[in-house]
Length: 177
Image 1 (tube, helix red, strand yellow):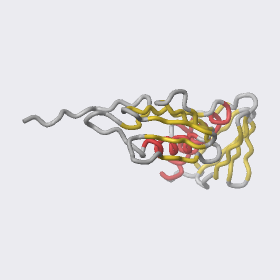
Image 2 (cartoon, rainbow, N blue to C red):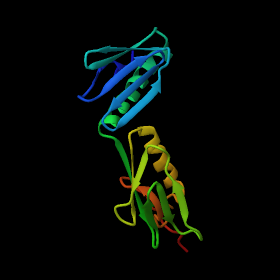
Image 3 (cartoon, rainbow, N blue to C red):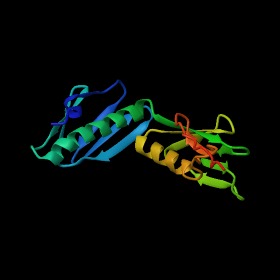
Image 4 (tube, one colour):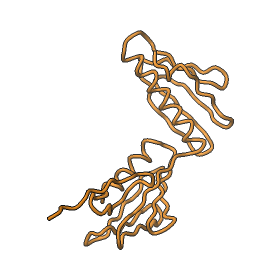
């Protein structure tokens, strides 16, 4: 059995979990998340704790019990605290501006880039060179941040581009004559 699946998820106050046929719904102060459950995992609710077990002794069931537990733990954290990813723009003239659910980027191209945020994702720009992506779904927040970063990845010689705030870019040495 997965070692992660052995630990129960303790539900904080204000969080409701509904188990129905083949899916789990987590409702909290920030919103509601729903995820389909696999047939390899048994989820039990005992009071204010969720317990996860493999349905049989197959390797797939053992692996999915830990994965399902981690995903549900992220859902509980998302509806209580939420998730955020911070991006930094490095380069002369590189700017970002959030207006409503649009993000406008000027990152060295001949045209500005405008990106509409999907439902459930909020974007903020505390300064012209910082972007904060927020939401309750960890996977969706990470995916949107990765797509924004892909417009101009950090290049290895000067480090210009869009990078995560905690990312360290190793710079290459230039060619010597």
